[in-house]
Every structure is written in structure tokens, then in C-alpha cells.
Image (cartoon, rainbow, N blue to C red; front, side, top):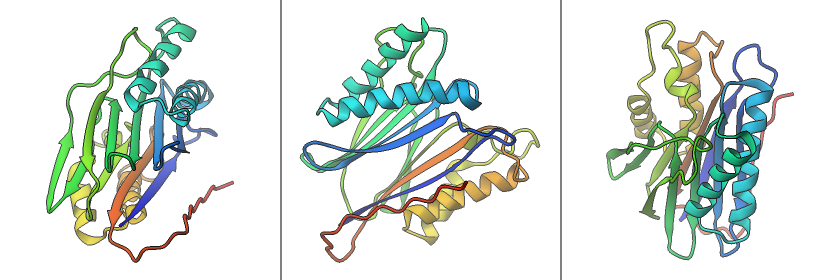
Length: 232
């Protein structure tokens, strides 16, 4: 099997910088973690917040700290430095090679979508952003690594798409439509982004970041690859 991760990310219209931050870190015992944070508001002020959260999380994950503990520490760190006056959503998707699981960690009111064997599950248990109070805990799920598994997480710019024109995007329905036509995570992420941009007339009213993780049955290949495109 092979893990593939697809990402699509765009700034709020007329903003030079996104308030979302996304980083990938290698885990010390094998595997990878993808960390996505959405800082309060947008632009540079939001970027400072989301950067602060993500840097804290990836530094701890790289040292072998568990995902849930890293998320709690990032929340306490933001609370301490900003006196509980700002918040950030936080999602962590981790491929844990020791347990052979995908660990899904949520501090985000928006759900994480999980597709397997023809069915989609919405991980939508109540979850709070980080930074507003001490001892904020994430919601954590562990999912077996299995061929055909697809997981999507995103910031709130995606479900916000189309709200201003009274044509909101049904994220789960669009996700299911895309999964039915392609198993490629990047294709699914791009499809979700395109659906959002169409509803926003290509002038997004909020930052949009989408991460799609897929497990595919491919010919074994020992080479790890990463593909990045950054518009300038």
C-alpha cells in the first residue's frame, strides 16, 4: 500500500496572505503527520496565530509526543501568549506506522470526512478550537490503515463557500461524488476547491485549505516523493 496526501489552499480574495498554516512533519518512529491550523480572522494577524499553533505542534510531534498531548500543549501555549483572547482551529492527520493507524485529531467544529468500502462517515463530535481556555482537549479517532481509505479535513472557508449567494456547498455530497470518480487524493482536493471557487465566483470570502489523505494499493516503491506547487 501507499499513502498519498493531496492539498489545495487559497487565500481570501484581495488578501496577500492566508490565515491558514499547513505543515508536514516526519514522525520519529515512522510515518508522517499533517498539521492544519486556521487562525482567527484573516490575513497577517491570523497567519501569526496559526503559525504559532502549528510550530508548537510539529516541534512536539517531532520529539515523539503523542498527537493529543501536542494539541493540548498548543492550546495552552496560545492561551498563555494571547490571554485567551484569540482562537485557532487545529487538525492533525497522522500515519502511525507502529500501530498501523491513521490518527485523526480535531480541535475544529467542522467535521472530518472518512470514506471506506462505499460509505462515508462524518467525524462530527462536538469539538472546540484551541486557545480560548486551559485544558482544551481534542477529539481523537484511530482508523486502521486499509486500501481504499480516504480522509478529508479542511478549514471553514470550504463550508462557507456559497453562503453569501444562498448556494452553500454541501461538502460531504461533493466529497462523495469525487471519491466515486477518483481515488487520487490530489484530484479530490482539487475538485473540492474548484466546487468552492465556483460558488464564490472565484473571489473566496475566506481562506480555504483542504487536505485529503488516501491509502492506495500500488506497486511497492521504496522512494518517498513530495510534490509542491507554490504560486508567486
